[in-house]
Length: 174
Image 1 (cartoon, rainbow, N blue to C red):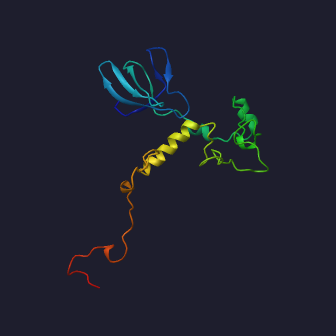
Image 2: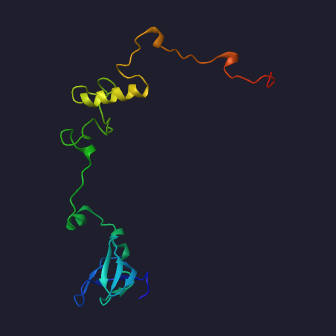
Image 3: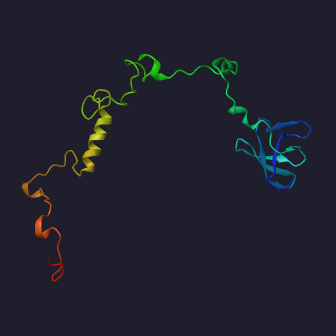
């Protein structure tokens, strides 16, 4: 068989019958042949070494669109062992975080907006301190980094008027 051939119904051990790539639409690919073994890439993505003497069928298994078929009703899905899926929005608040509300209520905020910047200081004191210190550090003002003397303070004022954009002598006189 040439490399890159699509195969299915592959034997793992000689004479035991096909065991790999047998589902609807399944196909494996022959990647390499070396010595007495061949390397296959299976539908799961697994790369596996198999004896060259094992047999396989060339091509892809039929009925590719088996999972595209509409089951039609809930009972058909139950026969396949699938249980019903209930959305959290239609539950009560005691059963799910998204539950409750009058009518079709939105899910709501992930974190309550009460307290200081939306933090509940009783439930998350350490998280709040980390948030506060990191936000102050971004402003280059640590919590205890206050100026001690008047000369330590700097006031940065924006440049206005003629000295806002310095122009070299002899150029751009308007």
